Image (cartoon, rainbow, N blue to C red):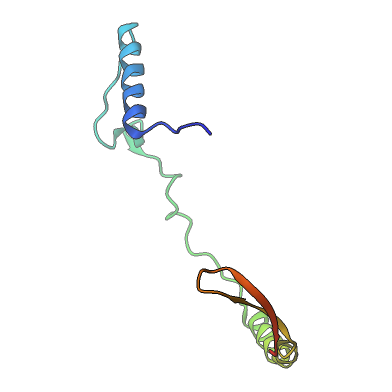
Length: 105
């Protein structure tokens, strides 16, 4: 299993890489806060979702009514299924399984 680098190690590695880049003649261009999100000095209007207008919603009352009806009719079936015996494991004080017993639902 390999050891994951700590935050300090990652930070040091990144600082070393930046120093190497700058020593080789690279340069870092600085921007004002929020400036990098602008295109030609303006906000990209296509990126905001507010220009689309209100969308029509699909009515779901029929679907919800059908789901409610299935729930009502399904309760009788699930009640019968819950009465089947099920296996229960008995544990000792230390969390070890001692035996299995069958209990009614």
